[in-house]
Structure formats: structure tokens, C-alpha cells
Length: 372
Ligand SMILES: Cc1ncc(COP(=O)(O)O)c(C=O)c1O
Image (cartoon, rainbow, N blue to C red):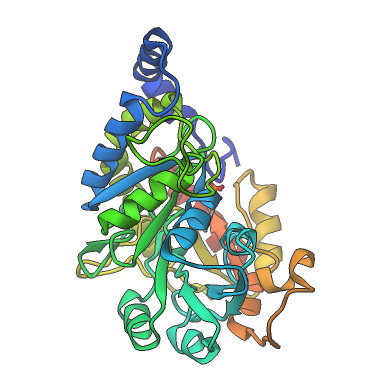
């Protein structure tokens, strides 16, 4: 192994964008406006347009985006919210922050997103909402979740933290449920220069509720120091919005690059005893936030790659329902075999838009060598 290949890297991207990013930051500093100014407003318009959403509201991070969206649709303390256990813990903590109860649901063994039948089985009289997570950039089965929500009168908040521009049957995720919650954590497909997030909604009243909840409960255009809700300070700031506006212009191109790398992996890794992700078809597009394979000898494979300087990562080693933080709030006994299996076998290979195909080929060769 010669040059190390990282799991992900922002270096090339930031080198290329440095002049534009500097210009954007200086523009904000010179403007003297740092909170809820023109950059946030413009970013909200541009992000909504990129997704085909009616409204996008910038917030402080993805966790707050989920929590605010849940509160805006009416989730209250004691309500149950169905979530996959196989996700980043923020999906669950956003529910808990409201005093609501996350009910952990198993995943589909093929897509690794929440299994609709398992969600239907877990829905009870206290269930108020569902959070399908479009994990790693692959869309959850939204037709099934919309049908379940309609049947049981539930709200849907899509966790799109890993799925900017992902589409499901021709529709961009974040525009299908009642609300979508996005993270712009720096390493996400669209990343800020710090923490940032957004909520997308269709309904104008819901949009206003989200705007109030992110800004200390103040009505949009309302009098200063008059507050109509108990909201928090979860605002997106001007500097982050200006950075995001620069990066948003490249998101479609970066997504296409991610898919090119993924398709190369899929082509070159055929025939090995590993399970490969589905890139999607006919309007359903995986945007490959992470390229995750599954392998029975995962830990050995990870060691082998690391020894060759090839970055890799385990997402996620511990299912959320087994996290120490969640041991005393389980609502009912949970057997989540597909979740456990994914935590045991999933391994992410290097993935970022600037990854050269020759580097992807080196990764594939290293994986092939492992199985020789
Ligand atoms: C699936 C998922 N949900 C929620 C979040 C929370 O986003 P943030 O880190 O911006 O709060 C993340 C990302 O970290 C995530 O990957």
C-alpha cells in the first residue's frame, strides 16, 4: 500500500472552494448581520428549491431539526415515536428531548432502513409519529410508512441527515412526510463549517411553527420580545448559511461523483462473500453518504484494510436500543435480529466525491486480496 486512502476527506473539496468560502465569510463579516439575516433567508429559498420542498427552515443542527419537527407536528411528553434502532443515536435523543418515548423497530435486512411491517407491529395506542431514517443515503420505504401513517393517524418526520438529494420513486426525501430533518454536520453530503441543520415542510402553518420553535417562540414578523410559544434558540447563523450557499451549488455534482464511485465498487466487488448496497433504480436514488457493505468477517476485513492504509468505519457498532443511555426507557421487549446482524457485519469503505476511481480500484483490490 502506498498512499493511504481515508474513509472520508474534506481536504480537496475545501482547497477547491477556499476562494469562494473566504469571500462568503468576509461578506457576512462585512455585513455586520450574523443572525437570521439575508444569508439564512436565501439559503432557505435555495435549499427548498434544490429539494422541491415548499419550505426549508434553517436550524442549529440535525438533532434540533428532528426535535423541532416532532414538536411542530404535535408530539407531546409521553407520546411514542417509532424509530429504527439502527441509526445514529440523535434520532432517539431528539424524541427523548421532548419527553416522548422512542420505540425501537427492526430494519429490513436488505435496505437496512426501518422495516414497515415491524413498525406496524410496534404501533400502539400511544404512538404519535414515525421517523423513517434514510440511512447512509438510501431512502426508507416511504409508500409503506405513508400508508401506515394514514391508517393509524400518525405523523411522519423523515430523518434526512444522511440523505441530501436522495429520491424515492421520483420524490426527494424530506418532501414526502409531514416534515424532513436535515443535518449539515461538516462531513455530511452537504456540510457547513460547524453545526447546522434544516427542517423542510409542505404546510405553511407547520413552517411557521418551526420558525417560532427555532427562535425562542417568536412569531415571524412579530413584535420583539413577544413570544407565542415556549421555543428554544436553535437558529442557523449567517456564517453557516453563507458557507452552505456556496456548497449547495456543488451538491448535485458531488452526489453524481459519489454514485460513480459507488457503482465502481459495486462492479468490482461482485462475486465476493459480501453483501453490497443497492444503488437504486427508476427514481429511487441512493446518494451514498456512506458506502456500507456487510461481511460475516467484518472485524477481520476492517483490520486487513486498516493495515493497508485504507480507511473504514463501523456504522453502527451498538444498536440504539442497546445503548447504555437507553437501558431504562425501553417501552417493550425488543428482539431486533436484523439490527443486531447489521451492527455485527456492516463496514463502510472510503467514500467522498473527490475519491479517484483509481483509489476506489485499490480499495476493491484490497478487499479481493482479503478473500483470496
Ligand atoms: C441519521 C442521523 N440523524 C440525526 C443526526 C443528527 O445531526 P446533527 O449531528 O447535525 O445533530 C445525524 C448526524 O449526525 C444522523 O446521521
